[in-house]
Every structure is written in C-alpha cells, then in structure tokens.
Image 1 (cartoon, rainbow, N blue to C red):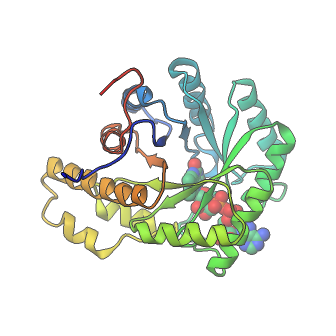
Image 2 (cartoon, rainbow, N blue to C red):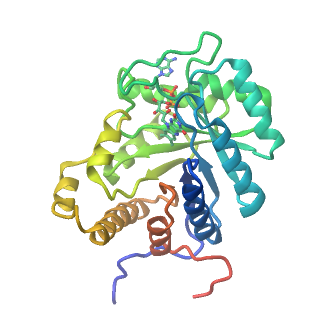
Length: 295
Ligand code: FAD
C-alpha cells in the first residue's frame, strides 16, 4: 500500500498560535490577517506576548481584548514579573479579568541586557512560580507556564529546571509551553524526564518555523535553545531567495512536527511571528481542517 508522507487524522490534533503585539498600524493589519487566516482552524487558544519590562503592556492588552471581541477566539495574555510590583501585577490582572481574559501565560521575564542576571522588583514576584501563585490568588485564571527541553540557562542543572517546572504547576498552572527546539528526540527525552518527576500536565512543543537562521541564532543563545549546525547548511546560499527560504522553513518545521506526531504528540504550539502561512500549512499537513470542511 501507498504509505502517506503525513498521516495526521482529521480532528486528531489541537493547535495554539502565538502572536506578538504590533507596533505600527501596518503591523496591526498584518497581525489581523494572520489571526483571521488561522481562526477557522479553531485553535485551542491563541496567545499574545508581553514585551520586556512591560513595554507592550497596553498593546498586549488591546491585542488580546480585540482577538476575544472580534475573532471570538480564546486568547491568553503573556505576563512577566519584570519591573512590576505585586500591586501593579494585580492591577494588570484585574484589567484582564474585566476584559474577559481568562488565560494567562505566566513568565518571569528577563533583565534588559541579554544574559544579565534577573533582578526582581523589590516589591515584585521573584520568579514565575511565585507569579502563578499570586495570579491564582487574584482570580481563577487558567495559567500556562514556560518549559525548556534544553534547560533554561539560569538553571543549575536539568533536574533543578524540572523541579522549577513542577513548582509552577503545583502553584496552579495547568499546562506548559516549551521553548522552541529542533530535535524531536530532545523533546521526547524532556517529556519522559518530566513524567518521571510526576509532571502529568500537558507540555506543548513550541514550534518555531525558522526562515532566517542568523536572526534565530541571535535570539536562541539567550533562551536555552540551540540552533543546530545543519540548519546553517540548509539555508546557505538562500539569502537572496526568500521564496526558497520559506519552502525550506516549512519543510523543516513540518518534518519536526511529523516526528513529534509519530511520537504521540497531538498538541502543538506555533510561534507564528504574526504570519499565518507556515503554521497553517503545517496544521493542514497534520490533518487539521477548517470547521465545516469535509474531505
Ligand atoms: P522561571 O520559571 O521563574 O525560571 C527561570 C530560571 O530560574 C529557571 O532556570 C529556573 O530553574 C530558575 N529558578 C526559578 N525559580 C527558582 C528558585 N526558586 N530556585 C532556583 N532556581 C530557580 N518573555 C517575555 O518577556 N515575554 C513573553 O511574552 C514571553 N513569552 C514566553 C513564552 C514561552 C512559551 C517561553 C518558553 C518563554 C517566554 N518568554 C517571554 C521568555 C521568558 O521570560 C524567559 O525564558 C525567562 O528567562 C524565564 O522565564 P520563566 O517564566 O521560564 O522563569
């Protein structure tokens, strides 16, 4: 028999999509196009990131509120501990609750300088686990937290990072979303270690379709993810060929998802960078179809 290259079944997988808050009107239009393109896939949720030091506080809020109001999608707001007292966090959280936001991605965040040690606000939360507990005390939010298949750079060792993940879940989070990675085996090892540590909450793999290796490498160093050498080779000579770069990016990300699917993963989180095409194509290959479409 003919073996399908992709064997996802309709209704078998769930996807969530991450966006960042737009800075300009042009970027806002682009984001909104992406949201509308992806909405028919009925994501389990979409999320909107929060800029360093609360720099996007208003924009994150407005974007999440608009997605809920106009696209009628369950939307989560990212929130960090950076440069905010507990009272300020309370105010932000209460505003979210009032705007109908019921899901928060709770993060510690980073210091301004890449690689600099995190300095908590004197009256703030010192880490994500404390933030989760604080938010749960404000309202009954659904809370997601970050996980690091290749270990967070601040962690003393992989076990300490797993212990930290467990603390965040014990504090009231119900799901983890992983930092991006490019080896399915790395994810499976992490998932197995988490299970051995009594972590039974879902861990969604964070999928980043990379179209620009140099940019991704810059970003990856500071956040506990490695861009493998083979990626450089794949993109070599494509600087002036954006269309070919897109195809390569889609192929690499789709292959990663295919391997994850083969290993039992059914929930995927896509770092969309506010573009729908790659995430849409990969979800399609995994068997997702817009509601109402019969094939
Ligand atoms: P934490 O879980 O608090 O942990 C950070 C490190 O400190 C870990 O190594 C942990 O093991 C260690 N640690 C924590 N508490 C203790 C303790 N009590 N004792 C010993 N060690 C401890 N950043 C943004 O600014 N905005 C965003 O919107 C954003 N979204 C993200 C979404 C996802 C899915 C991911 C994976 C990351 C995101 N980040 C975002 C990046 C994140 O803020 C950074 O990775 C940050 O450095 C760590 O945040 P955290 O929530 O994982 O921190």
